[in-house]
Image (cartoon, rainbow, N blue to C red):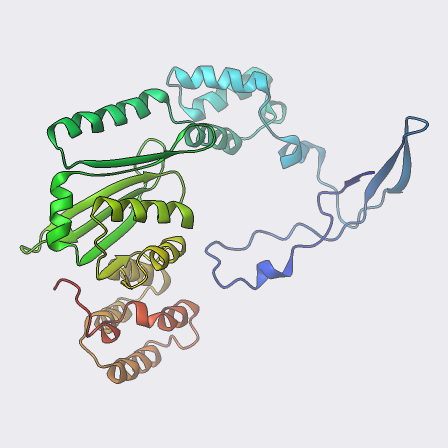
Length: 347
């Protein structure tokens, strides 16, 4: 049995309206439970298809024919299109210029069969899914060369089922020595995505006795799942002689937090104040609130003093009921100094 339905069939699942962790605005509602459909069955004995249901009436206005080509079901690059755009892209032609060329060649946007966004997504998927052998060989060759001059260099990599490089971790001798001396506090950051493949670059860093930043190790990963972070942390532990840090500071990534619980079960986890302040700037656009929020983060309050200060601050700035403020308060034990008075953070 096969069934063909209208693209506005059904309704959006209610759970998507109740999510509290949503970062983007809701998309426009397009599904209106349209009942238009065509259902067919295949008769094995007679080797014919039989129409068993045909609802022709729609409960909404139909899309004008000039916009039909924009439906996702009708969009996409054919093999011929891919070969042509790949050829242009390999010669350094910009994506926007490639799109303009394809539109001119086919006589208009309606005849192209895909949008500019589809083209950008195609090139992005190509870049993400393919790590060129030359780049991998160059990276491994560089690490081998470093190992010849640095016997304490540690490097480890993993591949996926297709034999492609999935993740790589490295730490030189200086980094390993620094961690032995200054590794009680570890900053674990993955906010950098500036490399060619747009892969997260994980940087392990800390602070030495001169209050200078020191790098303990780096990793390049293909995704940000719990298993990937566990692999990275286990590789880090192996490189550092199984020495666990006393505290870890992160940007609050959920997968990262779970991996830390598994690999560093006895380590205190604290959220990065810089990221908290950045989120506050984005969610509460008030300079007066930001000043008070910094006091809440850094001031040497007792827990009771912190609670009083927070309640007064929220009322003062009229933020009672603000979702971001409420959620941040729920996680206060992960960032407020009042909850870390007996824990060493290197300062």
